[in-house]
Image: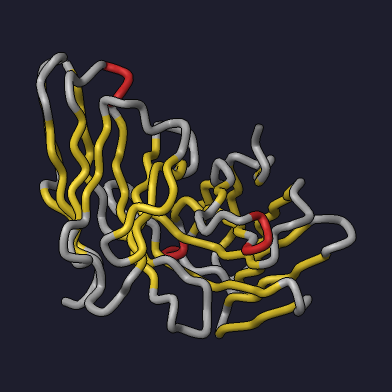
Length: 114
Length: 115
């Protein structure tokens, strides 16, 4: 049962434009959400996170939005750069679930076209 | 380099052989996690340690898998009698429970190929 879903396997964006990556979750007990970026043959690299008490968190070119009522979050990258081309994973965890592990989506491959 | 390190980076083995992977977490991180990632999927949780205690195991962790963290620092993951279905990227992550954020930091992974 996939509790975190990324329904778009791929996304292509022109350099300089905005990239929007989406993520949905089903477990209302999740209270912390993270985005990781992954290059081939490397481990996931932490990008940005958001707690369920917030609806927005910004770090430079990266902004994560959380809509708890819709159980939806999105990652905005602006402006997109060719070096952003990677697979992006959405992850969630919930202390109240009694588990400390992360639940991951299946990833979205972002290609930024120069 | 103070990040999470894993060794080896690649392992090719024949079906039925035993393999062991090592993970060195970020210094002072007291939680250590093992995940497995297969092609087209996100990482899936296997097990985690707080200090030297193994606190949780996923149902993915069959009895052929064993993990240890004897001194609360590095950890090893052993797979006995490997099967072709064990081929995957094995990822280690560490976390500080004393930190103000719930962020796990991942190592580069060990890619296992079972022939």
